Length: 92
Length: 147
Image (cartoon, rainbow over all chains, first blue to last red):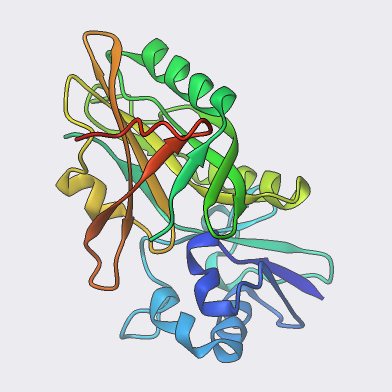
């Protein structure tokens, strides 16, 4: 099964579970399965149109899915997906 | 609200990194264990990816975040939060800091004034998505934050 690494800030919504395993065939289905298992995380992952939130990045291993097949990127059994929040700031 | 407690070594390394980054903003992650307190045992520097206004903005590359989570899992540590500096500016979150803040994460801000550490603070979001200050102590019970 593919594994989804849940970012630390969102683990409050997964009973502190750090990862989630899924048989989903592609990235979108995997993220959907995660939010199905932990409904409280859904609003942090998807916008009102059901799209993965634009400020989140998804990596398959060390690669951004945007340089692969985006949300339709297919998954293999030993793949590891990471959900990445934007980390930025500054005194501005 | 949980107290954030750094080991002497962790806070010294963080301060050293941020002084060296001056007048640019430095940034990194900190790790440890979250129990009754947030016990920080290690910091890891990350490159500020903002090359346009690094004296006032920091950005961490997505791959560096992936590596940070991976490092925490591999070393049985909690990724407690992210630190950054405010060069010649108070250790208080800015609107930009708030805009990008994640829930359940600690944001340590170090004020570096004229190249020296002036103040250290830690912040986290409350239920209303507003920053509240977390007490920061070093491991000899000395409060280093006094804003």
